[in-house]
Image 1 (cartoon, rainbow, N blue to C red):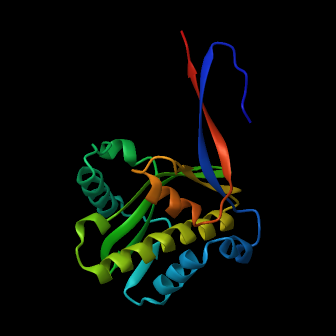
Image 2 (image 1 turned 120 degrees about the vertical axis):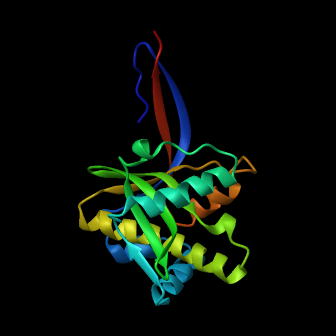
Length: 188
């Protein structure tokens, strides 16, 4: 809910929340058909392994920095990113997709979604990475539910900007309703 705080400026943007208080089967049922199918493909792939959470930070950070640089963005420093939980997917032992997540009980919030998909030309491998990324989010949901978190916040959803429309569509495929997220900035 928006607060009226004296001396603060407020900024609002939409975010998508997955409810983790409902039964696991209901969480999964709310995902789009395509997302459920891709998760099933990921689960059936014997070469894919999910780590939820992943105790090894280094492989995820290498993929994260390459992903950010491939989009012309600067990656955050390794020391800044180590505060997040890492959830990842490995294909034949190689880290291919992951998320950095803030675990601030009872809420989970996605900080970054990243993968090797922008650096792969093989269409079959792109499908595997797509399936794996959806599978990682499903693993986060199951882990969050098992650890008494109440929601997974997929972070900002901007479907009006053509540059971020694809990621917005991806986030919305998990069936979470849209809520306003408020950021408060102190005005001195």
